[in-house]
Image (cartoon, rainbow, N blue to C red; front, side, top):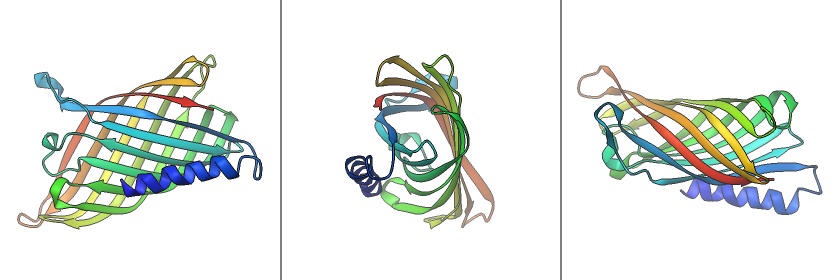
Length: 209
């Protein structure tokens, strides 16, 4: 949470002091709910609120902070909270809302009462602007080495999100996506590799400028 707070403060400073000094700045911010549950057995847990904020400078350099949260009871060995801070660069950008970007960021994951781990991560993102108000997107992030925690060694995570962003009104956007997050590790007792995935529908709403 402290990491996300710093990211939001940085976004505010950039918006307040840099928009006229270093060029045009576009951005978006909002809230989201990630509903993780046992869909096969129709068991669905009430999602917790997450958040995101993003800035783009000259439609080329990006900075994003995001927080994903799920109920602690939903997971066993995986994290119940993920905080990402990413710096991105658009490799291709045919339009303001159509691009392919790669980035390097920082991932902090909380494992309930056991504590939290953090490490660098790699990410990629692609968006396509359809009809000016509908934007399919996909993004992925990989943290190859989170470290050790409790009975788990060599923790790593992979997150993939794909969905649609709809602009029903000026400056307002709605988000519908499917998010998949997997935690992999080596058990200190068994010495064997193990993993725990969790996934579900993500709903979000925010504003952009």
